[in-house]
Image (tube, rainbow, N blue to C red; front, side, top):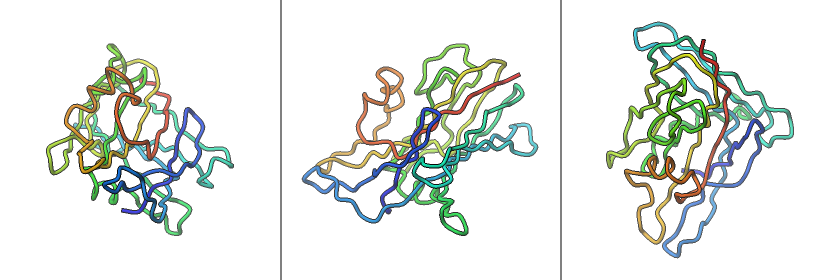
Length: 204
């Protein structure tokens, strides 16, 4: 997999070098860089119907041009949530999601913030109740496919794509990473963030 340049935000997006490959000396040796300009969330009602799509987009890929981040506005109910990543500096846009899925043993998404409760977030009464719906070859969650039970309320949903390569041949993506994030935040786990974006949430 090529290296990723991150899309990172606290309602601001900018690009950073990330996602290097670690040799057995524990040091990152960068290859060609990939770019993530856009994070796309597709909420599909579990009972059936069309998906509602919300996006975060950094048009020039480096935060120089003002990014756009959709508010997540939903009705209460149960949904499936698919997360996708694109590089829209390419024509046509390049889908980065497949590359993440191909190296799912080194990547995991985390869903945190005041608007979500779930494996990585302890926000009882939040409008979004998250659960993972996909796993890698070792049975650990990925987060490209998810379920969300949605109730009335407001808050923020922080979506973080974490790169978790082995260090000195020791696996860093393990089964309880979401619980570690819930207890200690993202600083409590290894790896680096390939993408992070904060979506406002309004369920009514």
